[in-house]
Length: 120
Image (cartoon, rainbow, N blue to C red; front, side, top):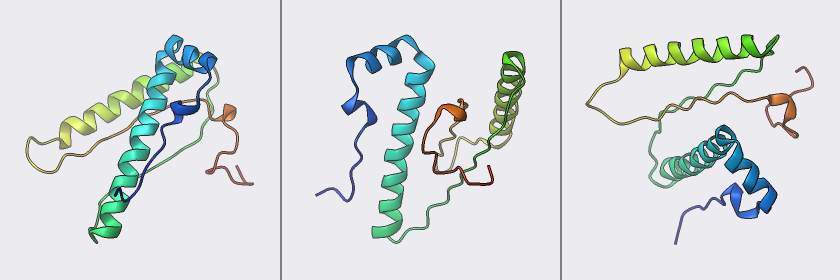
């Protein structure tokens, strides 16, 4: 029996939502990344719980505003360049594999954000 299970978000999509994901590839990728992150985190939590293993991990989140589309595009370009440089400096052919996830999306359109506080 499985130690945990995760239900993919697309199992309850309407045909209209599925069509939108096909039209907006980046949104579909964001959903896929979120689902994979959820599966991986559940599996790692199971490993930490049942195998009593220490699982090194890190997560960070930030909310910011962009004055316009050009500023957003510039941020993403700089962020990807910085992340690429960091990965190039620290990546090794040996050792345990790790996954790095980069996602940028409009937070103002998300209802019920668990990271949102009254001070935000």
